[in-house]
Image 1 (cartoon, rainbow, N blue to C red):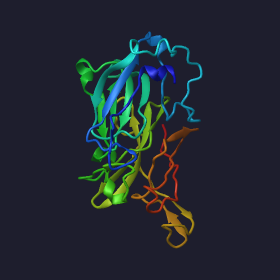
Image 2: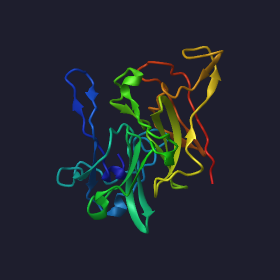
Image 3: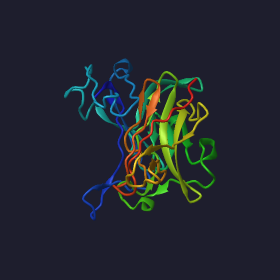
Length: 275
């Protein structure tokens, strides 16, 4: 655990009596922020990718402040909560000292299964920070979606792995050098399905680099879902559950299937124009 432990995030979940697995089907998830009461200089650590680093280690090996004596009910507790519009399967990310409208904020970025991205002040929900610093719905025309777009209903893929809707599932990734957060959205539009790679400005939620980029691709093969010796990326069935990886200027995206239903054989590592 890193000094980033100054900002701890969790969602409420209930256990269904009809299932052996925790059920996350709640209408509105609660984002919970907790702060370790340490000087700001001691608790500054950006978390820009899933599990802290590209090795997915989940560890901050130079940690010096989190000890049994400092992590206790009297020094480490929930300070406040914020509401969001859907479940949170993606890990929230954190950036410090982000300038928004001339004010510097430490920010928690949250993506939901309702295809919405939120930027919350990580230190307080008082005053103007009672509302998100910004929020952006990937279901709007400004983010490439058709009129009337929705997240994908869970019943469309015949599984309860992600319920009740499927939108942004994989953990986004932030490029601090360009102040960009990359993420994949999934949506249902006019009876068809779409998945897009978005590059959002972390100060506003606006699209960058001419995005979003629709995901597509095909490879030679005769497996499940193939046609004419080709396996084609399936906008409905391919499930971006793994966190996005940013390495040497390329965003890598991994896909599987929904509950082992439908074809789940292709992956994608699309590129997006850079400045």
